[in-house]
Length: 119
Image (cartoon, rainbow, N blue to C red; front, top):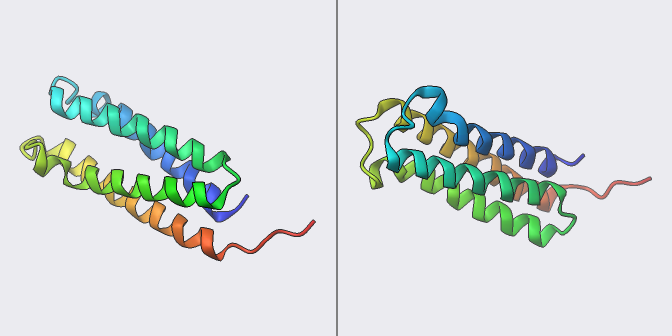
């Protein structure tokens, strides 16, 4: 398995965590945070799985760029959607957003630098 594929699977798990975080941390009663977490978590999971199973470098790179933008959104969401008073949600979203940005940035780099495998 290449570096990119492994990173894509980590993004899937980050999306899964984002999906369950409101319930795990007890802020599922705040609708804007809940729905942002659900939408972002599902998007990260779907795009991450797609990138992990895709065999097209162009598709992989495109999906990584979309996930990078989703990570950037997650990083700024607490400030844009005004839920910074919910500290746990804010910390979670900023940390997961930075993680997704780092993983997908690394994935974009890895796509261009992976060597073809020989049999």
